[in-house]
Image (tube, rainbow, N blue to C red):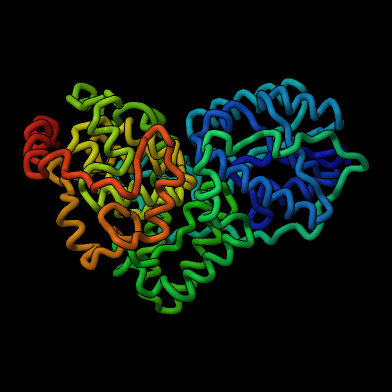
Length: 473
């Protein structure tokens, strides 16, 4: 647009200033820019840990905008109604935002765009959440990819746009519309007594995310492929937390990984593959949105999974009291830090869906409530991949044995000792924090005896194999 009417920049999961096509377009539009974040139904129904972490990211973005002489306007309510109110109050003529791809966001954004156009308001959506828009990646037959490796081969050599600097100036309006106070939203309320503990492990905001990336590529990417599966080693980038809220763009990470690869750092290519695995998850959630709530493979709809979350073994899994140290350490790591090592996620998901024969949706929803790096696409794909019901799934016979996984990836017991307090004379600080974070109604103490196994591993494996036989491809 060429007029000088105000522009609304609707932030969502893109809480940064650099590598931000929507923000750049808004600042180049010619009018004053009014940044806004809307606490709508989608935010309200996000899991407890992720909603708390989202609030921390909003606070960081607001400070970054203030340093640029701008301001983040906060409003709560239905997104379309909030935008209509702001347009009426400010005389804005266009709204910019970054695209999202999960079913709930797509439905909301489609409705918003249609309604705004009916009002003669420009509605401009932009890339930025992904490297490749899902509709631009096609097989030779013109379809979408259902297997990861061919997709990697298709995109690894693609040219990508140049990186965008943060705007040097964000034009401000003569007067600002009213804004809610972030504290009044109480975005950490559902975390209850665990909030302060989990908050202490978060690395928040664009500056911190970029520092995290720089440190990883300088010191750990060289050995990433060899060490990434060992949960006691700080080998990963830990950028999933920042990617979730858009505190850093995937494009920034891609170019940093490419530079490391060009410098001959051995683990860089594998790191880039992991970034494209995230793209694969969004490719699937866009083309097959039912992956978020139904079995991706329809024939799994009658698989005899348990769906009763009240069963004692499911409760033991959630509480990290299964008697399997690798599983229990991982579940406690998540409850204290809001994240979990990637291999640990596979182990606990396999244990729940195969050894305990419990529906992947039970685990997926627990992760959604407990992870601060919760991502709708990656979470859905990860659970269905491990369970066997999803695309490019783990073979039906791949049932991770948590005991042998312990021997292989935590040989010295460091990971277990970090997160399990029972039976230790001098428990680690992190292990004790678990008991300060959990609900009091769980009635657990570090002085309790560590539980015995809730299921024999061989028995659980055999039961799963018998059930899975009829569902193998």
